[in-house]
Image (cartoon, rainbow, N blue to C red):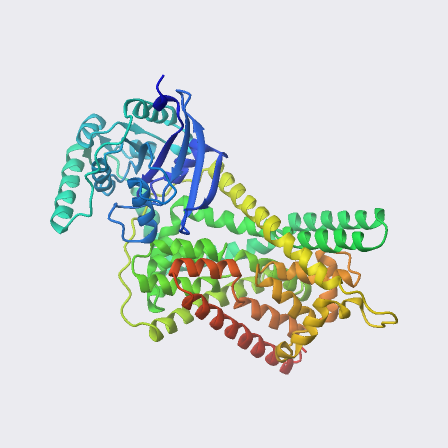
Length: 623
């Protein structure tokens, strides 16, 4: 057996957006995958491992979706450079798997012709072939294989059909191709683009016959969901249900986690001698990390809805519906998906703006993405709402959920308003028309859904370990040392570094109703927003709280006025984004100017909003 036959192979999945490429990646690699970023860029990089029927170890790379190697957006540049072997620190793939939606071959054929020019062995995976068969679509696979000069495998990724045959082809191609062929692909001119388009149309007409049973279901559903009035009403209802669920469905598992950490803290306190070690473990580590992990359930519920919308094919419809509204605010229709992704975290939302071709449209979306209520704000919202808003219903709807929805809505409204202003201050001009291929509706695959949720949970837990725990140790140290002097009568924390810093900065925050403890919590919250809750837990745990979220809520309710609580919520609607977000903006824009602009305008908005809300609430008797 030759060295080529036994060495690990690299396979890259490439294809149009919404072709089921990621579903195929999940089916091939299962849980044996890792998520990172490409070297030097912030496009998400998914890589997984598998073993082929021939016994070869294979590393599989899931590339961003593209319609052509003529890259027009940053993520398409990554795909092109990966295919051509130009990425720094990355070896070129041995085999390319071009994933195509079997019900919509017209667009992918241009990409297939470009891959043929690259010279690397590739196989065409006709995914969602079961849907094509149900529609009666007739594809001459033998003729199509001759036309494109590559083997074809039919697959149903969500049912794991065709995977063995696909991997057998990968084995065959890696055995028979010891190296890549000549790369004759280059950036085409206008005449070559027209010729390639004509050739793709010829192949399509030769090899594909119209379906005997066209997909009328999608058309009927779209007649309702894409209606300019009914469609928007349905979209807003879905978003409303999503935000209600984030608060209400998570109550039981969140309470269980909270109770578990509180019991753990009490156990440690009871079995360790009173002193520094007991305080560090119970008040620093357990209370701090527990006050963040308690919000894992609502975060996963949010991701569940977003993944459901994506996998079903509805996400692109939502973007289409929002195009006119967003266009009026100076945003491109494609900005809807990055902004909706920002509800989970602004970082992947900002990274996904790479699907927007126009630089000005993309930069506008980047600047307003952090105004979307990311999952890191959920701990703050949940804590304050739970402490100050009664757990009652209004016309059968949770009052706490309604307040949560109002905070989300405020973020959306002000994102549109800020984008409107940005387009008129920094640049003028019309927004480019929105064009996006609408995929066929499909049932989300439970396995893929669970796998993606598990991946997001691991990312959150990893963040808790790498960022939140060290920060909480730092907050505990600053809140504990130095000890109060002999004969001191005030609370011990007043003499600590955190207490002194909080009292020093308090005059700046006093006009918006913030006390010094709140000021202390905002500082580590700049590193990660959710740490503000953990910091409050640590600060008040030093004063004797038992470390549970319920105890912290009771403490805040007794020490804050309603006006102060509302001002704190208003601050977090516009809260300055975390430092990792600023770093990503710097990398995406290749300049410190835009992160600085973002930081200044969000701090200013946060302070102004908190000031107005606090003084209006005081005037109305909520002080």
